[in-house]
Length: 535
Ligand code: FAD
Image (spheres, protein in one colour):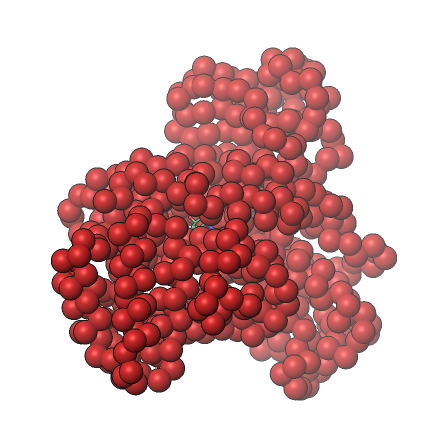
């Protein structure tokens, strides 16, 4: 089958199954499964694939309880297995219970409604059909806490938390019986430790009264230090509740076994202590931008003995864009401008990198132009040296530059970039592809650029494009080794930073892109860059 006809790839959050993996994977699995058997030539399947991918992305964190997979029945190697499973029509949806040892072929979902929200609720119902004997490993209880006449029910257990010190947070979502938010939030938080999420019903008058809740859905939070209060979210939506809980201090994504030790802030992993710097998430720090530039110029590029051809052009364009758009200290901007003049005036086709270093480190210093040689990560500091730092500062730098290009349309006059809407993004693309030490990152970034950079039609689009792609990377890296447990990868900006950026449509979280743009222009704008900790 031609590569182009594949509806799903490894980049998608679905598990791609085939004849040699299907049975081993879904039968007697520790989680339940929902599979779509499709055919890559079926028009319905093609049209439906974006919904299926969106669903799989939406419930990615539920994987310990239930996973989403696909089987392509048009692929020759799957002909026999699709026949064995009795698949006659495409798409066919089958679900498989956890721990099912009978060699069965799953249950078919025949409903005509295949909307994302309906299927997601079906997944929740299906999970609740498990008994205590086959309950998926790692899936917390989904039934509501209830008071039983006279007996000590779960809700009394909840109430008994009042004023008690505990080892973790307990969040209670109080809602109507037919609401799914509580169960969805419980499942969303499954890969996180440091808290327990429970569901209680609005019909439980005693609980409602004791917690002082008068409208639902509401969430009530018991802190480890015995404090307790109604959870303060701007909108009472699943995404707001889940996001609030994931960002609580002390709540972390569980680590894979290889990185189980929890690094402490300030410990750089080599036994020496780096002082933790307090910072605000709502600010951008000049120290990060300067440290990033320092690393880029003196470490990353310095691994190249000479620059020539495309490399030299990429470097010149990078220095041009940064010199014109970097909203930094006078001495740093002047240093970049001087470097640019020098590069432009040189007739050489090949420049030894030592000459650039000599200029930046020695010659310019004499005239008071100076870029700090100290690495000071602030908004980009990680809980260990191996985490965050430089790549974080590069993202930050390029977000700042796209926003500067949008806020100051004339800044690139007389550079050859004046009419180029893509000046910053193309420069970033070429820098990342040519010099960024993480080659895999460069490859991924190039794929994203090839796919959609041509859709950028304005400087505002450029700001949004980079934001969207950065979130795509965040989604891919959730739970990966490069995730700092203290700074979990999230879809950004989180509701606490920008409540108006988030909305819900038919049960699916959606961005209000106009609000996102306004937020990005403010967040990465020159007046939001804090000089704290920068030299
Ligand atoms: P980062 O993702 O570095 O983000 C830095 C800061 O930017 C955040 O703290 C937040 O304040 C803000 N932010 C977050 N999301 C957005 C957004 N959507 N829009 C605007 N601002 C946002 N690592 C890999 O393992 N695999 C890869 O393929 C990969 N590709 C990369 C491609 C590029 C171009 C770059 C620069 C880095 C890439 N990395 C990759 C590194 C990875 O993306 C992170 O930079 C690194 O793991 C550090 O993460 P962090 O928690 O500091 O946050």
